[in-house]
Amino acid sequence: MLGGAGVVAVSAADSAENWDSRDRVSLGDQISRPNAPFSADQDDPLRQTVAEDDTRALETVGDATEAFEDYLAAKEGQVLVFEDQESGDKMVMPHEHRWQSTYRRRTYARLKAAERYVTQRWGGAVPTTLLTLTAPHNDDSGEPRAFEAVLSDLKDGWQNARKVIDRETEGIETEYLAVYEPHGSGYPHLHVVLFGVAQPSIGEKVREYWVDRYVKGASADAQDCEVSRGRGADLSQPAAYIMKYLSKSLARDGEAAKTALESMPTVHGYVEFSALMWATGSRTYSMSAGLSAAVKESEPEVAQPELERDWVLIGTAHGIETGMYRGDEADELGKYLAGSRNQQRPPRATDGRPIYHALNVG
Image (cartoon, rainbow, N blue to C red; front, side, top):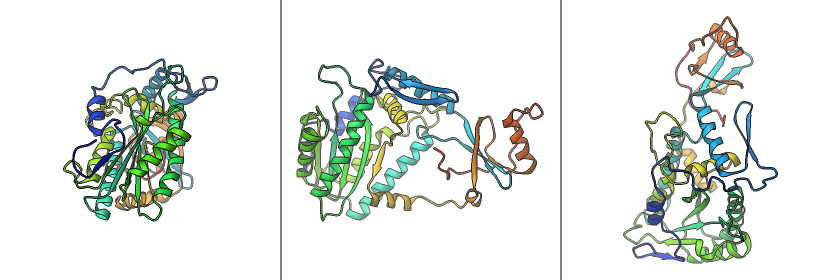
């Protein structure tokens, strides 16, 4: 139970403070279970493309973390080259991915925007229900389960649990935020924050169905529900407290570091967890429709007429200046990318102004 009046703990699972003090360690710690299975189907394991002509089978956690770190290295400094098929103009943009510190900073900003929306809608003492949901890490014989299987259990269980929550909160205006985070071992678990409602019965019902119907082998003691009505000293502002708790794996560590791997948050298990989300193409968090709309409205619009044209991705490269290439510069860039002997060096961009990340390029 967290300190302060107005807080009800349904179970004694890990609190935010205990989780944070136990799982934050120095970057560079060795992975905990390199030989643990990673793919649920070992006969047909997950595969992921690390670089061109390098698609690997990810059978173990060690396979996955090695491939993921190689992927980050391959993408370091990479740019995307687009071409306007009508004019021949070329546009070069940084290839940003979600494990770069710049992307994590924007994600952190979205969470802060969600916090502001919740506080404006319900006030600082917003009724809040925080669920922590887990799946077994070991099978019936005590052997480690595949990371993919644990994530699949969480995803399927959450889809079913949402229906339970919808029934329990019928007629009540609520919003939710669901965030996957790593245990110290790298296995994922799920935090769900329900804003606008503080009912222990929701946690009790979700836990009952989670254990009995949704996730085979799940322990009732490992599922947690904390309910706040915003009156306690520790949770006088539940939205700010919970957003700070959930965003620790998005901590803006290593902003001055040169590589994505060096800028990883210092959370134990984060690399293994990130390899899992990368290999399965899974999102780290999701929001209710109302919360998503509010966050989108908070993002500034940047007018860039160039981005309204029909651009086609024609390749990737390293060592090329970002910006717009027109006329002779566009022709020279095309020759350089094609490996022409007459164009050994990349040209300078016609317009080297920054191209903002307004295209959905992955």
